[in-house]
Amino acid sequence: MKKRLMVLLLALAMTFNLAACAGEPKKEEVAEVPASGEVIKETEAPSYKIGIITPTLSSSEDEFRAGDNMVKKYPGIVKHLTFPENVNAEMETALSQIVSLADDPDMKAIIIASGGSGYLPGLQKVKEKRPDIITITAPIWDDPELMAKYVDINLDTDWARRGVTIVEKAHDMGAKTFIHYSFPTHLAKEVISLRKDTMKETAEKLGMEFVEVVTPDPQTGDGTAPMLQFLREDVPRQIEKYGPDTNIFGSNCPMYDVILDEALKLKFLVAEQCCPTPTQAYPTVMGLEIAEEDSANFDKINAMISEKAKEAGMTGRLSGWPMPVTIFLPEYAVELAKYAIDNNSNLKEDVLNKEFLDKFAKDTFGVGVDFQSYQQKDNYYMMIMESIFY
Image 1 (cartoon, rainbow, N blue to C red):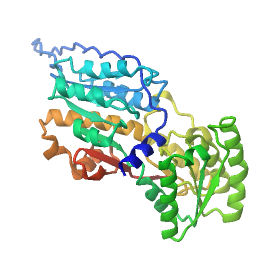
Image 2 (image 1 turned 90 degrees about the horizontal axis):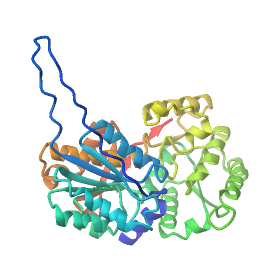
Image 3 (image 1 turned 120 degrees about the horizontal axis):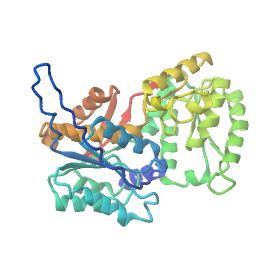
């Protein structure tokens, strides 16, 4: 199981790598002068810091913006660094960055949100140097057994469980057929094959027909163009054969520029993308004009998607998650660290249980999240987010 989980996580990662340094924001000096003329001292800056290291903006926009958002929300508390752009070639630099955060005596928590592997030695050194610092991964993909041993809190998406939940949701939305698109190099990965088999098994249990279609391989041929052209031609054939009460799932993110575009025309179901987020494919396909200041306003973006779905006669036939998990997990980790520090929490007794983690997500972000411990480890939790139906 451990091997399967690790391969799955690595296979389904978007491009998560890291670089550069975002400087610590300066504290603004503010003094209030009341009518009496007595000067009230400025509010004292917090006596602790939380460090978060993410990819660069160009390497993985979501994680970077999550770190930047937390700096803006908690100036003077959150310090945001970025790993090297080509982190695999500069892992020693990356590890040094992790350890360097522990040199600050005010540092009370360090969070790594990278979607890659190789970072655990840095966190181990932090613990050797400063055992008082709370360490959190959100996520990294080193060996789960060692992560559970050396890291205080490990957070990740439950990629494996989605092999069941996506099909169940499609069934609840009215799908009678579930079509799975993938390609040879993806299917050669154990976890992609395992998820496909899980989807097939779940569909059969629910009385749905499962159809597997193999596309041209973007990793061995001429890139994504032949794959997308195949989808453009094949999806209408499949819908003509099976009807619109069909859910289409693609194992590769670029597929959704075609899948969602065809869904708007042919009215079939899309229960969830391979990486469920309102910012993947929907804005491009629907021609959404999202202002820069609204780039993280997911309520507004989701409302725009719902309106376009309504115009297309697709209300209730498209679904996903209400915000990107690649923004949720890093921000959740910062909020969790801040809560634990502010409340002097005992992590094992006060924080590391499903009930608290689920409730904290709802209270802090307003979204329902279902955390489950990985192999009953008390500090390694994997999550599924509630769905939004457009």
